[in-house]
Length: 382
Image (tube, rainbow, N blue to C red; front, side):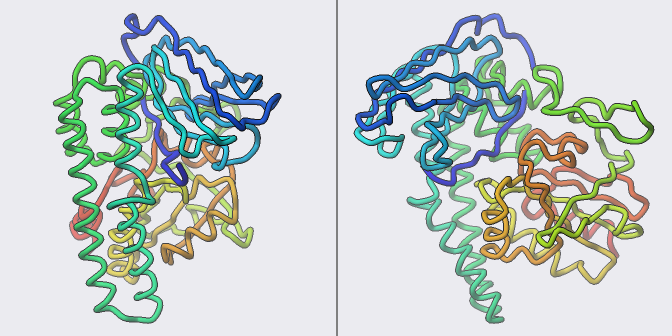
């Protein structure tokens, strides 16, 4: 499935119940023999590899920390040869008639079925997911020609579709409170602290003990930071993810824009700065864009600036997404994906993620989503 959130990542805790392994078996009729297959955990970089023999492969991986999200990729085909999987201790079998995972069938333990249900809900090429993308394109086209009435009409429809999707995710979680897949959905689709707390309160022990949820609850303890950085004096380490909090001085950064010009936080000294982390491949990032546009349009002339930091690793995908979604504020990208120094400095283990910085350089708020963006700005910018 294409363009499905490779944005995830959260977790730390009690793992005794997961001292087993996951066994992945696959039989794809046209899978290229002797091709390398890689199972990759995006947050930590952990990976396993095996080669295809007789159009089949088997991967066995210990799962001592519980369920998490993985990318399973055949060869170097990018999204074409990859699939996103939720895995925990147990078995999963993949079968199909093609060389890769398109139209493949997934069977095995109950979490396999649950993951397929979630993937169907998230599908950007069907149902409300497709409708959401189409409305976003309509909004952008209307804005380009200055048709505000049409943009407003499409915007209302977009909000309705987004709310339906959110309700679909919420209802699925309620029906599967103890599923590790629910932990994934909670951490990806309900990032606002209040809504996350509400969802979390209804989860069962198994979901809470998943690696995904524990990484969200205890940043830097289950899994170390994806990379180590140094700020300030030589030898002074940044520390673990999640250490930046409201009231702290915002970490400085310098990241290139599409033309290679370096953009630094210092360039915006004395201004309110809304720092937004996103990526072209991040499904949950898209519903936030209309809210960010509204906030930027309202406050851009009031000592306020927005900076979008992309976690893309391919310039073409990043630039095309900026154009497609009409992101007309400052855009920067290091092309390092999750290895980007800036997101590590701010302690984010998932996207979308944002930070509001005051004129004095101190963090005023974090994790503002939907209408909360404008509400917070209205409180502080007069």
